Image (cartoon, rainbow, N blue to C red):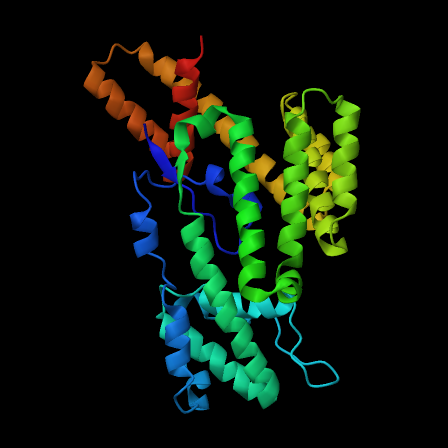
Length: 343
């Protein structure tokens, strides 16, 4: 039986969990353990902390993927000079740690250390280093804990199995955070992650419960959504509204609407920028379909000229170059294949 290595992103974006990833198939978790890019990072951090601070490094380029980007998150203190530990602080650490692979773990940890001691009072910088050390311990243990084999074949058809694995993985992360960071720091750093995890599990569980009516499922989901942090709730509501609007747009397209109808629909259901993009895309698709119809008629006339197969194919190729760009013709060929596959 084939197995899928069940490693989720350490930051744990639940929607990108293992079942949505086209991961490679292995029969052991040794690959994952050997390829944890931050393995041994606590020792590296301890060694770096013995060295002198060279703030001139902050004036050099950090990594390719960070070029032309602003540092995510914030590091700051409260009125008493104590480090503020929250989701912004976690985002700051993750901004640098996520580039490991393009930079070495030493380089990522040194950047964090330099920022801590340059931008914070010494006491707060020491607090930040302590949190970072424990955060690295959590990341290493969570990476290994989630590297257990998962039945890939069963996950394809068994929704309850998917729910159980996700539930177990999230609980493992919940426990490891508190083991390494303590309850207060874990809550502060992962408040949003855990709120969204709870929301996701509640939705999945409601959908799997065959004893619930549609109305009862919706009620449970609404309660779970209401418990989300306000900013996260707003994002999910916007996503749901967008999904409904896109479904309505898909239904509209099935009726071959005019450009005027698409324009009216787009500006009613989307913001001006999105609406304009939808209109331009529809106009481009309409133009392409019109050219395709003309092309198809030209091919039909070509079929009546009695050309041999090779000559006919060359004539079609020459004709396609007159009607379409290379990119457009790739789409046309896809339409032709789809049409051939229809009964």
